[in-house]
Length: 339
Image 1: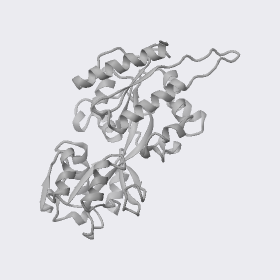
Image 2: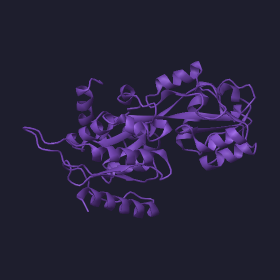
Image 3: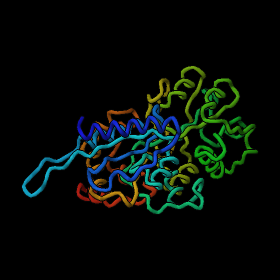
Image 4: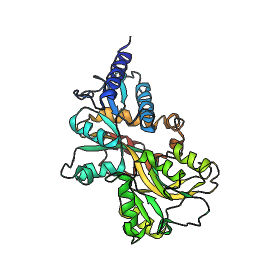
C-alpha cells in the first residue's frame, strides 16, 4: 500500500469510529510540514454536500503535484482525508483544538467564532483564517402556492415556523422580523420546530411558511413543492437588501428558474456561504497547494454537485470571507490576479 493510501485508509477508519461517537478525534495537526502526515478536513453529515465537497477537495489536493524542474525538487503527494462531523460549530471547535487542519464552515458561524458572538460568546478565535468560499446556501422560504404573497412582510398574520431556538435559521428569521418591524405577535402562530419536522408540518397544514438555509435544490422542499402545493417566496425587498448590505456573513443569491420542478422563475434571496477555513498555524506552502489544487481544477469541482455549478473564482476570493485570508491563499490569488 502506498503512503498516500495508507494515510487515507487510516483517516477513514478514524472517521468511521468517530462518527459513532459524534466527535472529532484528538490528534496532532497533520500538516506541520508539507506532506508530513496529510490534511484532515472537517465537513458535515455523510449524506450532506459538505462531506461530498470535502472529499472532492481532497481528491484534487492529492492529484496536485509538480514534477521536478531544474533548481526545484518534485513535490510529494499531499495526503488528505475528509472527516464527517456534525457541522460548522463542531468544525470550528476542531480547528481551535488542533484536531482538524481545515474545515468547511458557514460564513455566519465563522463570523460568530471570530468575534466571540452568538453561540461563541466570550470565545473569540482570532487565529481562524480563510482559504476561499464555495457555494452559497440560500435562505429558502417555503409557502403555499396561490396565496398571492410577494415578500416576507406578507407573512404577517400567518402561521410560521422559524426553526429551533438558538439555531442559525432562527437568527435569520429574527433579523428579518426586525427589518420589517415585525415581532412574534405579528403572526397568527410562531412555532420553533426542529428542521427535520418542518416540511411535514407544512404538508399537514400546521404551518404556512418554513425556511431553510441550505444549498438548492433541497430534497424535502422539492417534495413539498411537488406533492404539497408548495412554492418559494422571493426575499428581496428594500429592507431585505439593506439587511444583506449590513451583514458581512450574508450575500445576495438567486435560485435559478428550474432548480425546482414547476418553479419557472428566478427566486431572489440571500444566504450564507460555505467557506474553507484553516488556522494561522497552517504552513503557507500547504495552504498554497490546497488553493492551487482547487482553482486549477475548478471544472472538476463544479461537476460534483448542482450547488457548485455556478462557482466563480472572483467571488470565491471575496464572498462570505468573515475571517482574514491565510497568507498562502493570498499569495496564490495575487499571483493569478484574483485580488
